[in-house]
Image (tube, rainbow, N blue to C red; front, side):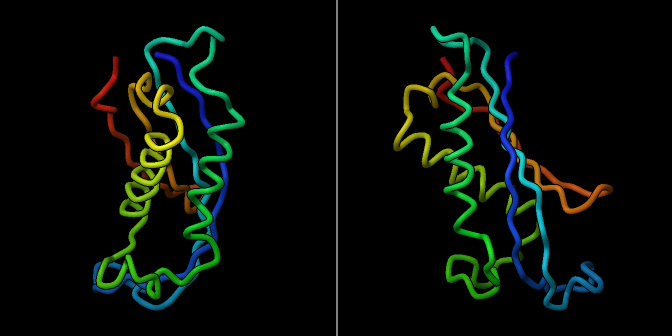
Length: 135
């Protein structure tokens, strides 16, 4: 299996209602390092999975939706607990949407995408899913 990874970061604010979240129930800021890993069983005719510049730009474009926002005030997230795990899946979905819209040939050759959100040097969460249309 081949893979490439690109990295960026976001700064957000949010609160996480529920006693399970302890002090994070209160409004707080979070800085995430975001890694997007793209997996393929085969490389293309250029001996790559995808152009690193393209996936770097896709990740950057997707993360603009979250960066420097209070997620509690984002309409799409009303009444949703924006946990790190939730955000990893949401970023995955937005990357897939962009790939399907603008880079369908590359998307169709992917086997899996994994999104990792690192909160600190000791804590992170991720979401990964196989791409159902893998050739």
